[in-house]
Length: 140
Image (cartoon, rainbow, N blue to C red; front, side, top):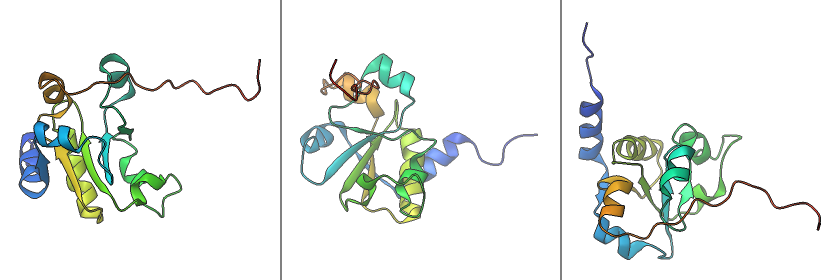
């Protein structure tokens, strides 16, 4: 028994509906007011490879919950009214995520063509993942 729809089919359909931003354009948007890069990769990928400087990390499994203002997990960054550029390793997960967020009504949302791999290959800046360690509550 085969699948009715493959992941490739889903990604192709998402790409037909959502905006894709090429790496050179994205480099020019890095740090621009009202533009947030959103890294949807797993924390292990961030630890291993780094991330785009200033990007918000929103794990793919929590993204819809963080975007929805009625969710108990909502994150204010997604209510900013700005533009969101999602990225993953190679632009498959980000295409699906961008379509889902667009279907939810979040605009404007796009994703990075070629993902983080294309960003790095084009010489895009890479930062280490911010530490997950919390600062001490009191001075030592």
